[in-house]
Image 1 (cartoon, helix red, strand yellow):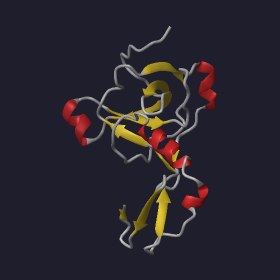
Image 2 (cartoon, rainbow, N blue to C red):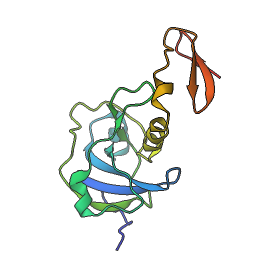
Image 3 (tube, rainbow, N blue to C red):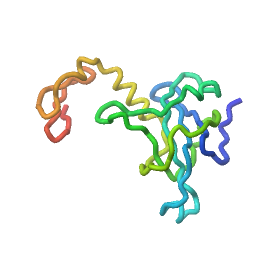
Length: 165
């Protein structure tokens, strides 16, 4: 039976969520709570820390999948193996499915990033990036006006880092 009723998430809880753009489920882990910042003192509600996991599937994960789940790393565009680990003042969204609990994969001790609860956007962007042929990605562009091909479209990366179609 699928448990979509969330009363009080706890540190270590794993939730699955549907990623519409991919037609697959993704997963996140609650890595802790922060009660000593401006927002939580003002509202009396702690911030929740969530970690996007490097796991997607057409099927809802089960407890046997938990040991396979690792932090998702953004290694596309200008990201350099950055993890998606953030504090947020929202609750786990309705419809997210509780899967199980395991020790947090990452500590919140040095976490200073704020943002939304993961919804699979980063998983989707990584999937698109992986579809770009390696020959397109190896075209020199940084610091030059050389054209770069992405998905069959020519772009020019300017010295200031902007890309023009």
